[in-house]
Length: 330
Image (tube, rainbow, N blue to C red; front, side, top):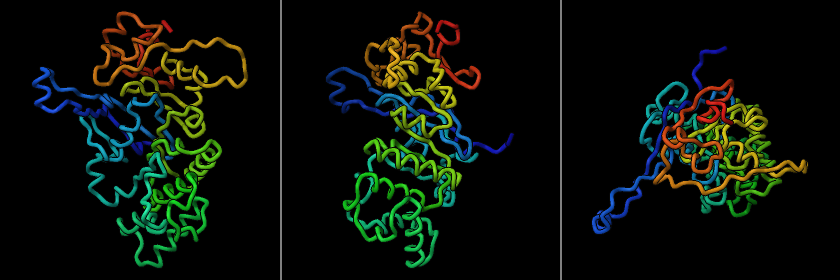
């Protein structure tokens, strides 16, 4: 066992957004302020060299967590520690800031269409002063393009000259250009065809093994998550309801919501087993239910679930926030 701190750790992380109407309209309508609780108390840690994935339905807060972790949003509550150091202190130090990068979801929107690939990839190199001189920068960009499976000659081209998968490879090369140790991947394959997704995922796994990278991977695609993750956290309405080793989560899901997600995976073996879909709609994060947020849709809910919000508690290698599991009702 090692006493080294995790690469990334969050404690009771929360982010609220004021979505109120303008003051005059609120006054005329006699309504108060409205707060959207996008993330409401998320805690996890990621050991160095491993991948934690966050999954859940659209709007559950997983992309907001990604932006909190890299400092694009400030936290309303809680804190983030990067390699044992407070995130705010780390972000003020250029040497620390270069150790963390983000790969965005849409390769069509995240690359400047007016810049050549050479300039796009070299921007972090120039910003952090990692390499001196234009010739050395071009050499480093050529090395990065080769590393992600593209040609050094592609540096003179513009983003529109590439396919979606190739653009995402350029995004990965840009993220790697500052020699990071930690990458936040916000649904990096969701805009790509399935065959191209596999290529990008294999590339990311290969780079992780070769460079010792640590990943926070955001996705709603369970097949993708199973392929890349060491641990998986399942989010519902701004909170983690279950976190477990990847294979444990997929073979023995415990939380009723996690089970519902697994039920949605197509049964390719055509086993004929009965599936029980979850009824109802995801509640609004502006007006979340009392107690457990999942109780209006949960077949195991009782009065305690409706009144008391469950906390993440260890059950072997798994952490679960569920009164039903705790009481053995599931």
